[in-house]
Length: 148
Image 1 (cartoon, one colour):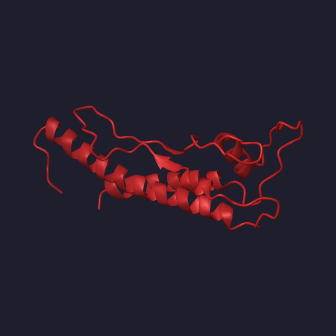
Image 2 (cartoon, rainbow, N blue to C red):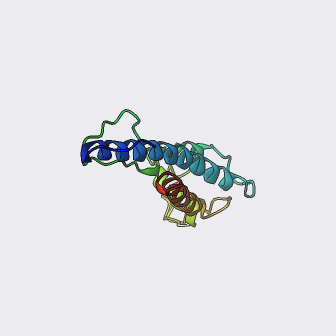
């Protein structure tokens, strides 16, 4: 690894390393979220409804590879499940309702006055993703900034 000759060079080297690390973490985070949503679908198959697969389209990140960093800048991104989709069948739940139902079993009152029926699938998939993302973040930064 090169040696910095002044604080500006040191800051640039650190930011470059941090940006490279975050790029790796972002890639791993997307993979973790895809695996977690796929894990949900590996549960029992529903009988009362047909799966749309929309949950598998929800993992997103705000990472921007072309983002410019200056002295004292920051490197960050957010990993999240996109809630923009709205279902057009059944009680037409929004994606946030569907995610809460799928992940935690949190139900709501549908238009008929009854509770929404539970979804069939493995619960707590989002917590699995968050745990894996945190581990990926820690492991990647540790590998980047631990002296060899």
